[in-house]
Image: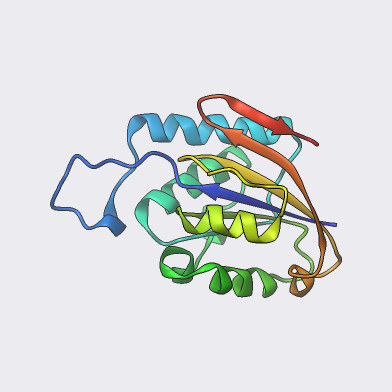
Length: 169
């Protein structure tokens, strides 16, 4: 069994109109939401073996905040530009290349791509992922290259304003 948690970056600031989209920081609310979602995941006994994130500042910072809550070494966070600017097919290919020793991966990115990826991977998941929202999907498989053919199950949908929409289904 493999577990993938798709995590949209936390709320980012639009305060500085001169910043490029890629460089927008988190708001204080976004930082708190990232901590809240990490604690909610811990309650569900989720723990990352791998954290991979878009290199955009808001995504990296969300990943770092959550990594700290899980005592995951910040230097082990992997970044991948395709999470920022790629499509669903690109992101599926990235997932297929995850080492088979990894059982649980946390994948930090952006909308609409993460929502579309969720819909692609799990037919029963038809929600929109809000900022700092988390979708957990289980895959009945032994290696990540089989992700497109594996039986999937939506195991959680966490929303920072409501914390848990569904959980441990």
